[in-house]
Length: 255
Picture (cartoon, one colour):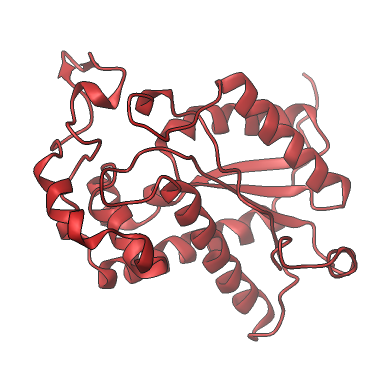
């Protein structure tokens, strides 16, 4: 059940303690992909993972109350893209507070086991930290899940506006991909993220190493790959949801 589509009475009838909170970003993804890519892909994976979990947990296609899907958080930790117009960002403190308070509101309604489905690399460390804070200090349990880290062998191919994100967009939101600019995106892309010397990244902003914001070759990401990525991410998420649902989330006693 997606809260954006439900009435409050629908939500009140949901007999579950499990929720998904998609988390994305509004930031540049090259000349061919929308600023909302990270929120769009996070929400698509969240919904697909919920469908797989509901089907596997209930044995049918009809139970849409096994997990609640919240609306996505659309702005994240993205100052590294600030040189590209349209990018929005907040501080890590603001981001963590927003996630924490959103999870608290979910928990208030009884959905106190929450998977944070993330679509933006810049959110990863802040999400891990806030999930730990929520679990240790609040009346909820939270765990982060970044979809492009959960797609098997393809995880190593993640760039930025590159093959994986372009492929998933071509599958879930093809009208938003500017196909006439994909070649331009490829030509201005860098091969990898950052400028590395002695295992240290000298660059803090993407504009330092990529001409148009793209990392990786988006021409390698077709809709068929996107469909496979969505299936892989959804299966991984469904497995995680099952583990979160059955986990003993009581905290160990003080020693």
